[in-house]
Image 1 (cartoon, rainbow, N blue to C red):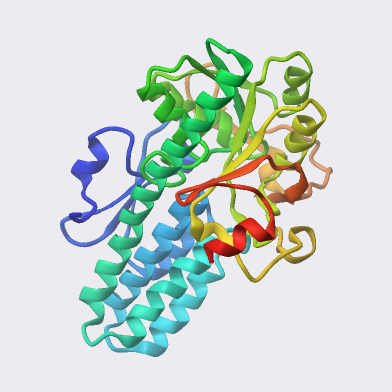
Image 2: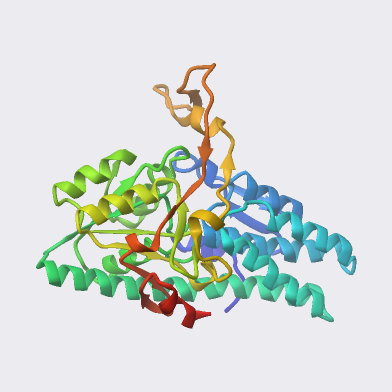
Length: 363
């Protein structure tokens, strides 16, 4: 497949990042969506590291993609200076601690860079390959997940289906269709009547800002809800299934995802609602088993708790503080959902159970 280009990005909703004709990386700056559609040019490994850390880009897959491109940019910048490349790659690898795709992508890139006789050409090709492979993974996840949607509809004798999702795991998070949203986009292509409950996903509002923006562009019927609404909807039979993405999944099936996912899984279990997690194989952490004990949970700035960004009454995009000036905030970025609460994992390799026996064959 050819290089990522701006033309590909302009074709519709498929790319959150692309290479310019000069070989620089350009990304959609997700911090400004949905009110402003801006891009950011990334020309060095350090800039890629910064874009990951400050959430210009986010979502496990795209973080991995940008990390891979960041290593390529390091090679372009430092040439044969492997000491500088290794130092820069380490910084990228440590830019966020929870999403395992980040570490996986950097390690894969460095495996190529360290053994290549033509580092720049091979690094660029490998970074592009990582992105293009995610396209194929996303499509398979969409196909397999949509088959599950159709199975649930048939079992429940539904004419249409209500799906609840949390955070953003669409094409802004993993190109082309994402993970959690990939089955929804495939359902739309198959003509299945579908409605999505979109958790706002405080404190950064990735659901209210990003998932809703994606679904609106795609013409998928959806409703934004406060994070604490999901349990109520489940009690009143207004949710038929839950699909989320993942930032890390252990070999025993525990899932780290955006904070609040665990509570949705508990509510789904109590109301006998299927709870699925969609992820590419690169999101598995085969070295970890007990997610609660072994997965590092990122602590982000408390400013994300205190401030919210939006459009004011004059139509201007602004940021306001919503908490008392003296109050402290604790901003846990993720939580862990134990495997016992998960109905199944949707991967490009198929639909599998969330347990060690089923997962170990994927290694």
